Length: 96
Image 1 (cartoon, rainbow, N blue to C red):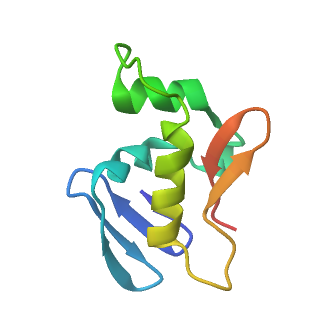
Image 2 (image 1 turned 120 degrees about the vertical axis):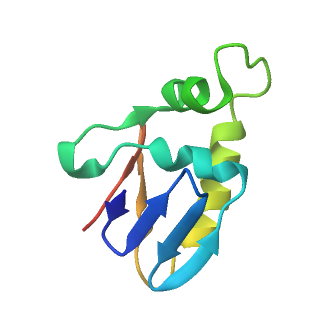
């Protein structure tokens, strides 16, 4: 998946972000967040189910924790984060 300056390959758990190679660990599963071009955002519950499965009984705030990990690895100052928080809904990827 390519979103603006970010190229994500969740199968290889690798990212090229602003020309830098980034190796992802568990947060690579979050690469399924929808591209913001279709104006769809993934709800936190959708991400939780897609990444950790329906049997997950831990703290749902793990989604925010891993979104933070992913942002720290792929974002580059002074540019805006590629991962967009859609208040009251969830998250999407932005390419603008």
